[in-house]
Image 1: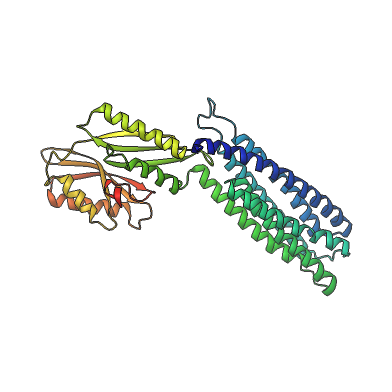
Image 2: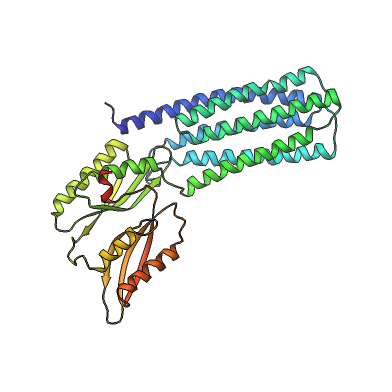
Length: 391
């Protein structure tokens, strides 16, 4: 059976092949559409048809950007980029979103000119057929890009799919405008173009927003993180987990780190061997490099009446239930500092200061000298406590 690491290498090669095929198909289709529409648009003196041809010309640039970004993303890591170049795919999507926004703004400008200075285009059936022929071509490209973009997690192809769908709407509206102008004398070309421009701008904004989120660090891959946590919880030497972080360096390229609570009374060599096994298992099963930091835990030396035990019970009964880690107590004559971290569900509706206020009030009810210093972490992966090991 092939390992996930080998499967990931094969998948990256397949993604490169899909990208190359998509580039050739996209370039051929858009060159043909752009040349034919610009020629007939000029002959018919139709601003909207010329604009549609220029739109297809810009699509050629988007296809090339998608291909180049995927090629750059495959470059191996180097001294300047120790985690590889995978995020070049996101940069490719960013460039495509900017192209879409440019097309939308330019179409809005052209459409406004057609509204303020309406002029009937010269209608011929050849102009209409050549214009409308772009619709089935772009429908094919939409499904082709979308299927391959989803199957191989190619963000730039997904962006190109959205761009192709925009082109379907654009060309459809322009073809309708030609018919309305010829048969009814209605010069609605500018209004239809303006409506399409708004739709294009909205889709460009969405792609830009999602891509920027990926570049600056959005929500991590929950499925991948949950699988890693499940493997870690299967090791009896690991008593608890916290501060799990999953870094995204491009599709199929991630790096993780986590703090693992281990018994302070267990041999350091035994613990180190268990941690090494866990890191290798996650790498072999998930192709996920992970760094595990060990936090030694002293088992129940302070008894069941300790502030740590009582605060833990309070947090367990809180709504929503919370967890605590890295607890330490610094005693003094007039104040006793209680320093610890709490973990909140990422989707909680409670505010941090409200929760900290409740915990501090409870701690002071145990002893007026208690002063809490609390650091807040967020959990993106569901329960990672030891108690959930056999749920």
